Image 1: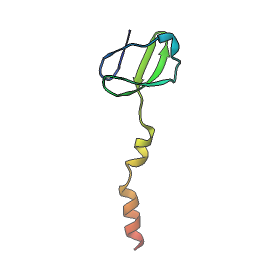
Image 2: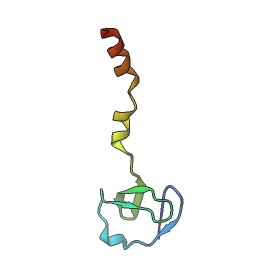
Image 3: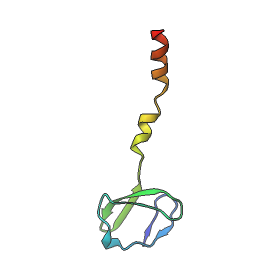
Image 4: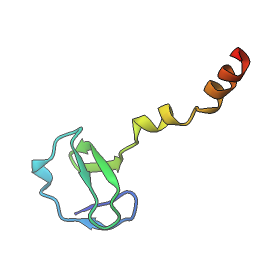
Length: 68
């Protein structure tokens, strides 16, 4: 039995049906998970790559103020 690495809920998965890199969502907590190992099946939380692109707004505004 595989557990969610975020909430420790037991996930009912057919382990042989999953490949490394596959993604899923935990039905208990809603966390997005990625398969990082298949023997045994190992999961890790899926990091949102877009998050880094949206955090840096301050620098753009400062540059605009200097041009005026």
